[in-house]
Amino acid sequence: MVQLQKVHGSQNKFFLLDQTQLQNPLTKNELVNLAQQITNSATGLLNGADGLLVVSNSHHPQALGKMQVINADGSFASMCGNGLRTVGRYLAQKFHKKSFKVETMQSDLRVSCQPDWAQNVKAVSVEISPVSFAAADLPFTNLGCSELLNQAIPEFAPKLTFSAVAVPNPHLISLISDDVLKSDLLANLGTKLNHKNPYFPDGVNVSFAQVLSSDHLFVRTFERGVGFTNACGTGMSAASLIYALTNKSQDQLLTVSNPGGFVQTKVHRRGHNYWIELIGNATITHYIDVAESTLHQKQPDFNNFKITTTSENEAYQKFMANQYNIK
Image (cartoon, rainbow, N blue to C red; front, side, top):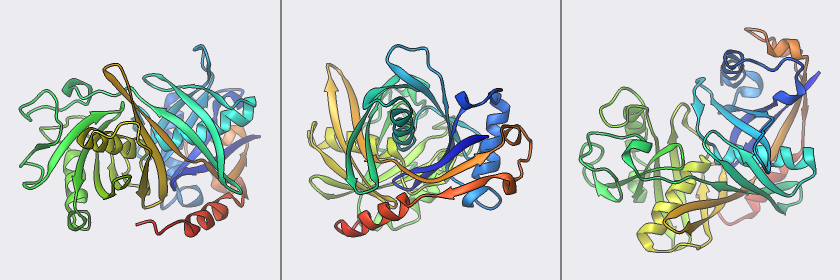
C-alpha cells in the first residue's frame, strides 16, 4: 500500500505523492494521467484539486527532496509556493528536520518550519526565487519593451498599469481598485492571455492586487493551467514584490489576503537580485491509502482508495474565522 495526502496552502488544494514509496515509480506520462484523473473537479477524488505534487529523491547538497508540480490540465509548473509549503512540511516530518532545502525545477529553495499559527494549524516559510524581469524569462513579446514595470498596456486594459515578473513561473501583476477587482476584467484577461495570443506565447499567471493598507494586500489570481484558485503562492509573492518596488518598502512584513485565507510575505534583496519569503499554513486534510498497482492504471478506480479525514481543515477554518475579516 501507498499513502497519498490531500493538502492545501491557503485553500490552494493538491494531492501529494511521494514516489520514493513506490517499488516502480510512475513514469512522466503516468504522473500526468494520474494528475488529470485525480484532480478533476467533476470525476476526480474528493472533489478534485488544483494539481498533483510529486516528491522524489534529490541528489543536490542540503536538499531533502525534489518537488514537481503538475497542474490539473496535465501541464508542469516551474514552482508553486503554496504547494512547496506542504511538501516542506511533509519532508520535515519524514526526516525530522526544521530547516532545509527542496529541489524545484529551477533552483533549490529554503524551507523552514514556523511556530504553529494555532492549535493544529501548521505554518511553514519558503523561499520564492529566482526572480527575473527579463522578457526572455517570462517570456513576453510585442509589448515594445524588454522589461515591464508599472507600464500602461492599452491592449490589456486602457486605464491600468502592468508589471511582468518571473518567480520563476511567469506573472502579470496590476495594482487595482475595488471596482476593477469586482469586474470581469481579470477573468477575461486571464483567459485571453492563456489561449493563443501575440504577447505571452506560453501563457501567464494574471494577478490583480488591491492595496487595503500600507501592509495589507488582497490578491486574486487567474492561474495558468488551472484558472481561478483560492490562492496562488507565487502570485501573492510576485504581487508583494511589485508593491514593494512601487512603494520602496523592502523587508516589510506584509499580510496578503486571498479567497482561501491569507499568507505573510517579505521581499528581500541580495545585491542586484530579489527573493520573497512566503509564510503560510500547510494543512493535511486527508490521508489516502491505495495499492501501488492502482496508481499505474489508466483509469484508477477511486472506490479502491481508502480515505481518512483529519481535523486540520476544521482547525484552519476556525483560525481564519477568528482573525480579522478577510476580504
